[in-house]
Amino acid sequence: MLGSLLSFLFIVNLGVHGHTYTIEEPDLLTEIEQKAQSPQVKKEISARLRKSYIADIYLPDAKVASKNYLEMKYEVPEDLIINGDIVARRGQVINVLERVKLTTKYLFLKEHQFPLFLKLSGKNKNIAAVIIQGDLLSLTEKYPGHMIYMGSRQMIDKFQVSRVPSLVYQDGLKIVVEEIPYVTKH
Image (cartoon, rainbow, N blue to C red; front, side, top):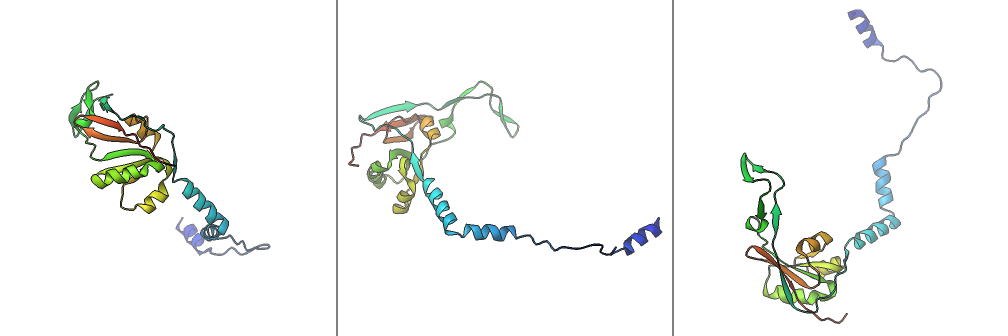
């Protein structure tokens, strides 16, 4: 057994029989980098990136000032256990705002309504703009010191925002959705 193992280790080169051909494979990383440097690809990436900053969710404009109050209640689907302690029992209804506070006010608006955000944020720095229609990139470039976010259908549905501009904030154990009429020339 040891002899066959040693003889196997001494066989290093069995020789070459027939024709051999060199195979050159391109370096994949180099090819990707070269293609990414092409002007056409750069232009396409830039256009896609630019398009990703365009918000386009339609909501009608607020015509009348109003306030709606929401409760953020949640029914626990199964016992919620953290570190061995039961925090909430299955079927228990809890008010989320007792445990999590909404510390920022959110102004849902369209790009052409942005002057209202500037006016309100001048009085209260704890306001964030949530753009539902418009160019988020140009706004963030023009106003770098402000909190400006892109709105989503999920946020709109969660806060039951139905018209813009709407200011969303916490008041005690309720969420207030305040519609603010704003007339602009656009």
